[in-house]
Image (cartoon, rainbow, N blue to C red; front, side, top):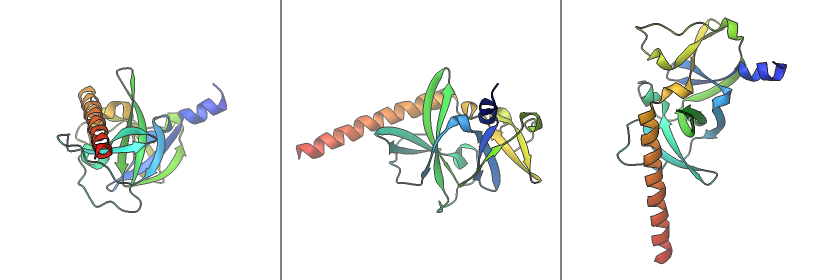
Length: 177
């Protein structure tokens, strides 16, 4: 394995949700966007905030606080949207995730990653790959490919497609008037 491959394999983007630090493998992160207007989509799960336009494509956006059971708070200047590419049953799906703040990209030795917390943790550990210890603080490494169930992804895709169709119809109606 080359040094550049090793570096990518051990790179994590850290971000904050509530009072906790989390990390995602950089291979899942496409882009970091400033907070922007999100078009709401009716009849979606509470964690889905809506959709945004990303380079001409409709991107579903979720609130990571709600998804992880962390109490909601007002968005701040540091609040941003992580554009993530996740794999569900061999399919690649892009999803935006609202986080409180993005911090750093950390290079972390795979051998130093601690196992995920056991039962009794306030977080469902099924999507936690491990824990990094940085400056006497713990950062949970999330497996973004396991955060969503297949049903949730299908629902997000269906709702996004419905929203695209609705927006197209509204645009056609505006042109007709």
